[in-house]
Length: 253
Ligand code: G
Ligand code: G
Ligand code: MN
Ligand code: NA
Image 1 (tube, rainbow, N blue to C red):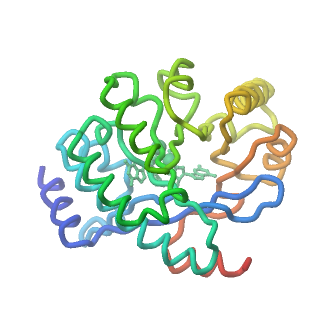
Image 2: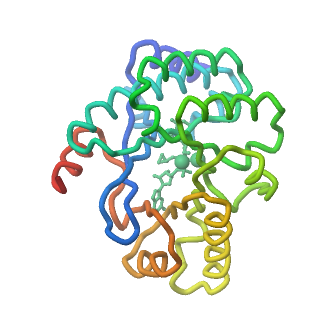
């Protein structure tokens, strides 16, 4: 509870931080996007990672203000990064709690309207396992965000309570295969079958595919053979602060 009071203050005081991990084209390995990952620099506990406070923020309702902060900051940074690479896209994680809150959606649409030139470079990542309890409202909200020009990605695909029906129902244009299936791709034949099938299915549905957790060149080559569109993982780069990311991006331009 004390932590939530502090988080509320951190949002208001603008003392949260975002790190960025590159998303690369599988074949050419050039950077085409970045995923924004929240960090909370805390004067007592050091850098607090999202796994330690996102769930609490969801339960306390603070996730609404937090996600607005994340998107606002991501858009500012995307504008800065576009000076280096004007086709870069920015992927931002949002919570299904956000999709169920009409006030949040209204605020987000206003925010996006103010930066309408950036909308088509924004991807909203939604974790599949959270969507099961969703209402018709959440779906409609996703459609109105999509109509504004932002892309929707299904995050952590393959884990949780996956339902194939969701692939049909959601206006999702991108599928992010969970790192659990990618880590041992070189040795795990079953994972090769699952990843191959997921990629084929996504492509047949007109979606693009990102593999998460790519940690070796061997894995990248397998993913290239499987026609996986994009890769993300420690093999390319870890999440880094905005200044380092900007430098990293500038080295290839
Ligand atoms: O690097 P990593 O430890 O950052 O991220 C851990 C998890 O936290 C990931 O599953 C990611 O989706 C989630 N996460 C990271 N940043 C955000 C954010 O800004 N909002 C939400 N809702 N989740 C985030
Ligand atoms: O939102 P999502 O669950 O996809 O969040 C991405 C998470 O995966 C973040 O915590 C990020 O730091 C982490 N991550 C990204 N690439 C790798 C990787 O190659 N290996 C491992 N172990 N984790 C990764
Ligand atoms: Mn994500
Ligand atoms: Na996620």
